[in-house]
Length: 344
Image (cartoon, rainbow, N blue to C red; front, top):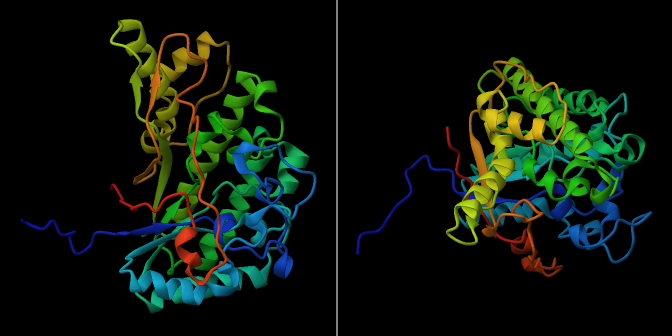
């Protein structure tokens, strides 16, 4: 049997988010993020304050054990390690005037450890961890002010880690805001109370911020490669009926238009038509010359869709892996390990 071998420069590895693995949720001046009040993730209502049943507050203690964790990644043969920089570690409230130097130094140490083992870092700028202050004060990405706060965060980390990080993602699974506005967009207003106008305006703010981040990254780090990432849920028609086939296609379009905007720099015509039908008015111009250079894809499951369905390829049931505090904790970072493939 012939073996299939990855090319020499193929980036094989795994991914985590700061909120999934770091723990130390209030250490060294870190502020609260939305994850700190979401003990049950997308399956439960947020709490007023962090509670003892929120395992993310401790997680797998990567904050203190990153050296041994990264050593194990190297032992597994990882060529790339995707992780996020917690916005509320660098700016505890999300809109502070000065960054937290101690936490900037922490990520310096993480990157140095990756370099020690020849592991390429791939940094996610925003991974489901909007600072809680921004969620409470501005209702997250519903406010255009978050663009400036996000850009300030980007400027600080780009300038700090230039030369250490080549690959960046502006946000994790950006299209999941359609399904989970709080975890994805820091929007505290319950989903069922959001109008389509409010939701798509928030989406537009995120897309503008992503475009501006790409532009800024190339100004500060000309050799950087900044990509986008979507949650891919292949959607199949429930039946061969033409109306179900059309409905499934339209459901996929609502999920995938994010990548169209980020990789092409403009809203697709089919979305313009949908927004007009829904009486949503948004100035859809995106900055030119700010397209992502690769698309990241995460695929958990597929779904079926029929005419008259009310959800857009909605996730119905995912059993999430529990975090572990055993020494083998590294391998419990995520619901599933993933291969990072960079499509250039």
